[in-house]
Length: 131
Image (cartoon, rainbow, N blue to C red; front, side, top):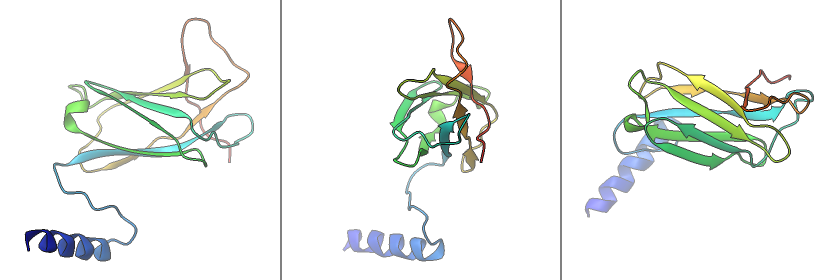
């Protein structure tokens, strides 16, 4: 009987916010965006996206180069920051630093990786996606 109440509540919550996932638990940070080639704007499917903070979370972008991640407060460093690394086959890694992330809010981070720029000894910074 109790599980029926949870299912009913989940259906009600989804009806209130169409298309949104239902999450039961402590507040989380949501990070999402797109990954593409800087020079062409072409999506980079299956790019590995890793969030580094107190913990590490890695996941692949989908077939359209879109990624979506949720993580708990324990992943954030003391100042609410994380480093996000993007790795696609045949391209140098790219990184972005995010600061002052807020629990319960969504942050969008798009990353364009240049296939013409390489740096010895370190990853590149994410660039804006050319649309």
